[in-house]
Amino acid sequence: MTRLRRSLTAHWYAWAMVLPVVVVLAVLVAYPLGKGIYLSFTDADEANTARTIGVNHIPSTYGFVGLDNYWRVLSGQEGNFYGRLGWTVVWTASCVVLHYVLGLGLAMLLNRPMRLRGLYRVLLILPWAVPAFVATFSWRLMFNEKYGVLNAVLERLGAGAVDWLGDSTLQKAAAVAVNVWMGVPFMMVALLGGLQTIPAELHEAAALDGASPWQRFRHVTLPGLRTVSGTVVLLGTIWTFNMFQVIYLLIGQGASSDSEILVTYAYRLAFQGIRDYAGSATYGILLLSLLLVFATFYRRALARQEVAR
Amino acid sequence: MKPRSRGASVALHATLAVASLLALFPVLFVVLVSLHGRDGWQEPTRIGGLGLSTYRYVLSDTKFLVWFGNSLVVAAGATALGVLVSASAGYAVSRLRFPGHRPLMWTFLVAQMFPMAVLIVPLYTILGQLGLLDSYAGLILTYCSVSVPFCAWMLKGYFDTIPAEIDEAGRVDGLTPFGTFWRLVLPLARPGLAVTGFYSFITAWGEVAFASQFMSSEEHYTLAVGLQTFVGQQKAEWGLMTAAAVLITVPAGVVFFLAQRHLISGLTAGGTKG
Image (cartoon, rainbow over all chains, first blue to last red; front, side, top):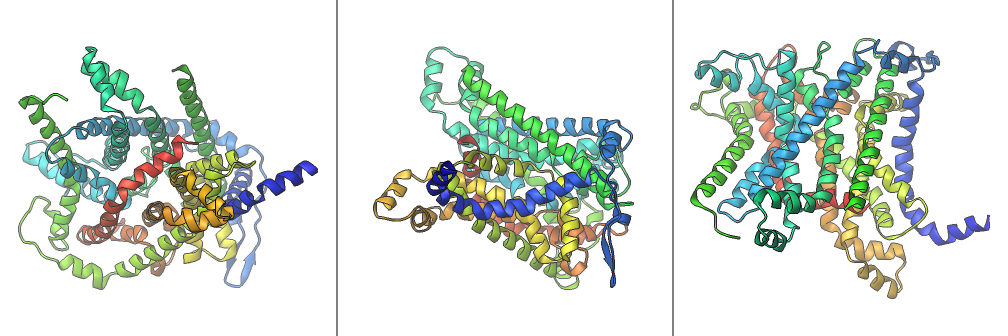
């Protein structure tokens, strides 16, 4: 008790300062999260949830079903969970790898003294300045089968028109392309910032010792970028895994499609058809768990790398 | 560094020029289509015959300006609340060591990881019970679940870059920790506040998932929802869509270029010093 009081007198200031945030997080994040977990153990959908029609208030009648939802999803009975998880992982990995590789390449090119550097930098950041939903719509227009500019160019070149957004493999490739276009500038600028913190003397010393450009890249540049890379790859993975707009707005909101990732599928469960709130909540919780496991392992791996050095 | 050979120089500029072209092309293309009138998009390779008719139509005969206003209100509300509420917490986490310090930082990080799918159903039912669906307040509160942890995380990173000597000077002059924060650190962090606010503004501005479900009447659509009605299942008004796209992107883009330099350092600073 006295320990508590002493801790209170020492830290009440800090606690008072963080109180508003804690309240907001409790009301807007923790409580909904708790409710989401609860919903995932029920059979809630639109028909049995409390609602008000005119003056009549209908109380909710959904019941507790235990782990049923999780069993149906994880056993693959509902919504082809594993197939979709596979595509989501491929989507995330390919986007993040392309973001990182292209971003690093461009950052290294930009990190040299040359003419027009400022102009290149501005032009290359441009995709980031366009709001994501605007960019996605623009790409949808360019991918249009009949009137899209890509097919117009292909036809000029003598090749036939391609139904970019019709076929499921092409859909996926198109979605990756759009997301890569939007995401490279962030990686590029972040990595460029990282490159500029590496002292030029390190490169010069390595060059004097006879290190080849590849060796300098491998042993000077990459280690120098480790902290920045660690953060941007983690952020990029989370953002891409949760990327909603591109898939939803590019591929469309209609019938079920193989190209939907887990997030868009969970969304559609909740707001189309019978509005399967419980099923959607289950997917949401599973997604969050996946991300948490990933982030934990990722941070641990980074920390181990630090120790090993 | 030794001077580049001529060949290397050409290769360098060629690569950057191609990359810049790829980055620029979709934007230029949209601008071009928007100048071709309502049905001009059906001839994507045409160049001549430019006019502003689509812009006139979008501004006067659609709800574009209403949606623009709605987006502005919602995004500004979420940003103001986010920055106001989280500034003091960011400072406390940056400077004071207290029990709960680490879990709080961890919460800020994890809350940014939340897939929209986790919160959307519970928030939908909660707002429904409170009668806040299809209202500005409901959407602003929803966006705060994203903007508050994000702002706190970013601002903590900014406060870390302000030297602790300033705090000590304030303490010596007899200011309380809150006084130091309010009178000394906050004014110094003004660029950080601006950039953090800007970023959460842009996030709210472009949000699609929550807005599409929570705002059900056309009068309350935000831009991200309204634009979908231009190119829905039945009609395809790409001419109007492109004009609207340009009108949305120009102001956002201008502010973006003013803020982006500070943005990166903020995003990565929060992460490196956990």
